[in-house]
Length: 56
Image (cartoon, rainbow, N blue to C red; front, side):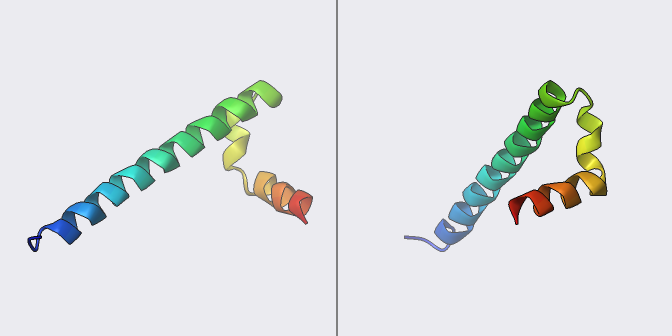
C-alpha cells in the first residue's frame, strides 16, 4: 500500500456521502410534492419542528 491509499478511500467515501445526501434531498422534495403539493415547504423550519414532534 502506498501513502495515497487512505486519501483515495476518504475521497471515495466523501463522494458517496454527497451522492446519498443529494438523493435524500431529492427524495424528500419528490415525496413532499406528491403528498402536499408544495415541495418548497420542506425548507421551512415549521415543517421540521412538526416532523420531530411526530417522531417523539
